[in-house]
Image 1 (tube, rainbow, N blue to C red):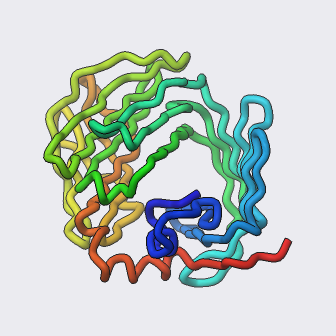
Image 2 (cartoon, rainbow, N blue to C red; image 1 turned 90 degrees about the vertical axis):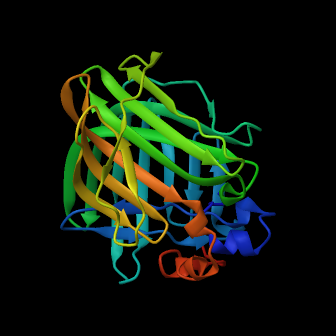
Length: 272
C-alpha cells in the first residue's frame, strides 16, 4: 500500500495509499517471472488476517502465511499463478527505527522459517528457507535516506540480519543481530564491509563478511537497486543468504522514475 517505488503514488502527492496497492511477485532462475501491477481502491479488500488486491491475496491460516497469486507478468504478458506458503519458525515482535526522527520502521517478524512454492504458471515447485518482514513509514524514503544496504543470512541457529541505512542528515547506523529459531534476538558485532562486483548500472554491493565474500547470483540489477544471492564468512563458516542495495540518490532522478511504469503498470479500475 503506497509503495515507495510507485511513481503513481509519488505523482499523486502520496495522499491516498489505499488507492495505490499491489502484490509484487518475483521468481528467479530459468523460469523467471515478474509481476507488480498497481491497482486502485476498488480492487482492495482488507479484513483481519487477509489482504486482497484484485485477483491475488494473502492471508494467515493458523500460523502459516498463504499467498495466492493470480497475475499477469511484465514486460512480456504471461500468466503467473500459484501458491506460496510461509511457516515461520517463530514470530519476532520487535520493530526497529531506521532513522533518528523515527519516521521509518522495519519489522522482521518472521526472520526464519520454511517456504513452499507451488506454481501452475510457470510449472515450478520447491521448498526451502523462508523469511518475511515489512517496512512502514510516514515520509518518502528518498526524503530521509540517500542509500541503504541490507542482508539476511541463514545460519545453523537461525538467521543473521544486517541493516545499514544512510540518512540524508549524514547519520549512519548499523543494525546487526542474530535471531534464533525460537525468535530470540541477540546483538552481534558486524564483520568488516566486503565489496563484490558492482551492478551493471554501477550500483555498489557492500556487504559484511569476515573474509572475501561471493556473489552467487544477481537477481535484480536495476538503475537504483540490486538484489543478490550471496555467500559470506560469518563466525568462521561460510553462510548464504540475500543482500540488497538501494541507491535513493539514483532513484530520485526523473529519468529513473519514468522507467518504473515498464515494471509496474497501473490498472486503476479492476472489475471483480
